[in-house]
Image (cartoon, rainbow, N blue to C red):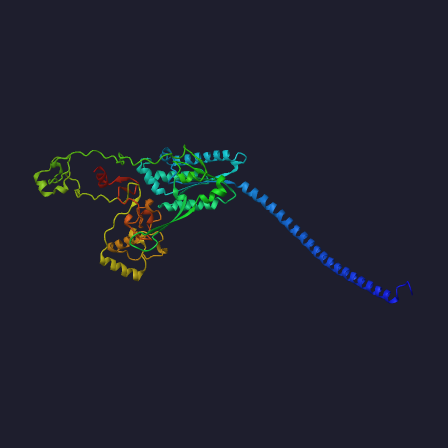
Length: 499
């Protein structure tokens, strides 16, 4: 066995090789299992990616289709909006003076000016297909009174006719009366901007005028917040800018209409500005003319009457007759009331003066607003009787008891029955006056039983007054309007003007 490895050594070598082979096979099997697991994970990831890609592809296709539809829809119904504060942006004097025709002319001119400006701003767009929406928000009664005081219009009704014609001249033009109180118009305009600016179909917004700093800062006014004998007003001012928040996202879509000189705060916003001098005033309203004279109806000259002519005649009235004068005998046998020709039937003459029928009328102030005649105080006894009848019979019909007629007749929901006495009717008149007439100060119904303004006027401090819009109204009667439409100036009012 010299020179040869022993069997034991060779066996040991075999065992060692077997161990290495087992270890290698074990390692290969382990690596294979790991690779198989990773392969399964990759297959799952691939399947997920395929599903995800298909899902996103479907969403992308749907989004593209929706975008195309949105662009088509927004392009087909595009419009431009002009929101104008009518208390600050005033139309030219000649337009106001034209009344109804002036309102139509102002609407047509404003429509043309806005269209021309849009063509310049968007040269590549089909501006002719865009609708033009214009909203003029203002205190109509206050402006009408101011224009009349300045001598621009002779009657507030001309301003109302102007507004109606302005809205009718263009289908999307509106003349909106926000009523008395500056915050009412401001709030409506701010909310209109908030609603329309994010709208994709609203391609451009014009805003005017840019001379009211109230649109730079949000202000909230709480009037009559607590019951009191005085008007309690709280005003909270926030630093949040109304137009400032639109500058970043909508600056290219906003144009300010400059009538009078713009306030520095508006200039600092950097918005584009435009002027329409042929439509709006570029200066403030003039002060009230000192030589303004109210129209006085023509009256014939008064003929001087002597003192003797003013004394009543005591001699009996004897009509003239073509027959000879009666003899003394006949005169003694017949009175002066039965004088006539011989053989004719005696006639009785009534020399009593006939009563002139009282013509019904309503009272108007100098602004042609209806003023209710002051009612006398009620008799306490009549009030008690009225209360007793009210408890036993229910609410009374105003028309039946105050005017004597009711169109509803037997179908009326209120009590007719026996007519109220004059004293009780006065109580009912006071109660009827406490309810506001739907026509308010413009009512011309002579039989109307409702109230047309607050009887306390500016001195009213009731937070829930039915007539709050009339608190600034002139309650001095200036003329009477009769049932036939004729007008008569009140002498006391004219004397007051002359003095």
